[in-house]
Image (cartoon, rainbow, N blue to C red; front, side, top):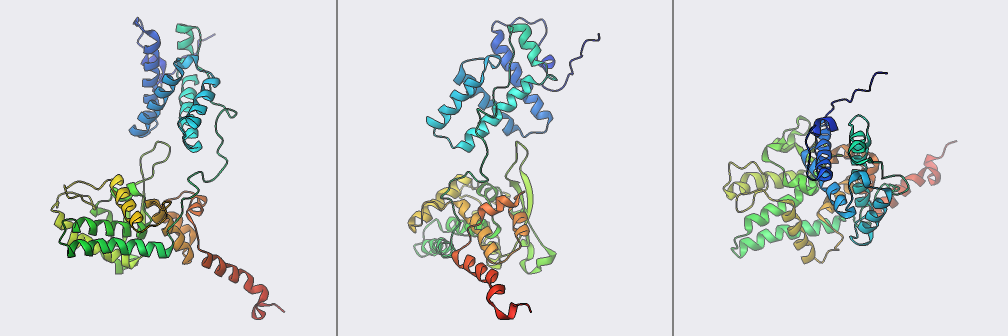
Amino acid sequence: MAQHRQLEVPGSARLELTAGVVHLRPEEAMVEAMLRGWRAQQAARGLHEDSILDRELLVRRFLAFTNEYPWQWTAAHVDEWSGWLLAERHLAPSTVRHYQSMLRLFTEFLTDGRYGWVAACEQRFGTFPSLICHEWNTIAHVNQYEGRPEARAFTRAELQKFLDYADDQVDRAIRNRRKGALVAYRDATMFKVIYGWGLRRTETSKLDVVDWARNPQAAQFGRFGSLSVRYGKAKRGRAPRRRTVLSMMGWAVEALADYVDNVRPRFRCADHPALWLTERGGRLQPAEINARFVAYRDALLLPAELRPHSLRHAYVTHLTEDGVDRRFIQVQVGHECDSSTAIYTHVSDAFMNSALRQALAPAFDPDCATG
């Protein structure tokens, strides 16, 4: 019978293990070869380098927790580790499930016959790795939404109050001849852009001036008719997803145009591509956006559950209340599924009552009755 030929696919034991070399610590050498192979296998699939590194670090943490080698791991190790993450580290169930998924991917790689790690371990150590993450010892995904239940959108009154306060900080800095007037103006405009285009913090931080373009169907917005979001939320280790967001709110476009034309040049960083600049000539970072948001929110005594992401929630909610097509909103915010957009929607009682009246009208309006 012909012997089965081991495929030399990226990540295989045959490619990562050097024949004829005797290691002082063969177990550690095997682990490092496995991780090198897993990196090669993921890179060949086009996964982003940062995601590959995150997965490797997770496996190394599991190694340290168990103090055992992968061919010695059992399902009991997963039970102990998951319990520790939940009870001692107080991680969210969704986070623990994500960790379990990454660990499952690693053990599936090791036990896949195409890569030869089972045979290599059995030859060297008399045992081999097995699948340790199963349906009965991992957290099931039973809810569409597992984020913080208190997360919600701004009401229209809260949003107006927040944006007015941001504008007031500009006027106050100018009146007091304070140095922070430019920064205050930048931040006031930035919060309007987050809401006006339904953006995430990271997406906002990484915007460049050249990301804006004209939209022939909305000529009134000039060169700010559409926005190319180049750093949308990545999916399953892939590169950031791109999308185009069409401008809809004229007041937000006016605020942005004024900032780009009259305020941003005063930061004296003409060669820097970033839309939001710091006083030191760098790009504004997500943590800085969060810090300024919290300062404004707390100064206004607004609820602590409001976060920068609440502006994005408000974008979806308010467009829904205004009767904008749901599919259009879904594309604008970059959701693949309508259920994700639904999670973002927190329509007001007034909207619900209006919708109820419209639904009941045919039954109680004589003009709508059929003969």
